[in-house]
Length: 154
Image (cartoon, helix red, strand yellow):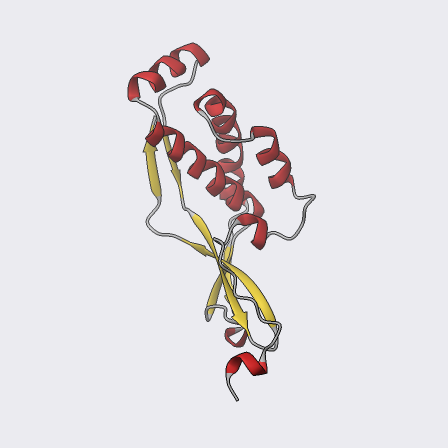
């Protein structure tokens, strides 16, 4: 008997793990903000920065934390559980990073002047997501905090 005979309905996950897999609450304020922003573009950089700076301050008050994980279900022994604010800051930071790397410095400087965006350094820890398929139990999603912090100079 092989593994396919034991788990007939098993379908491996072939897509990247995202915030949508990890956060199961469709009414989360994170999705409302990300929906308002839409696709990240240089035109909405000011809005992204405004939200980033607002929620970066709240991450200091409400950070994530490590807790004992359930290793049997694929978690780390010390599993990291980010706060929703920390997840949002990470998603916004990744958007800023993408915008900065996909546009010329001249274009960014022109936008900064036009929109009144101050020069600043954006600092955040990237939160990424992973899944584990535990045969007989299901699929579990976990968050991880990357180190060191990412710094982006605007």
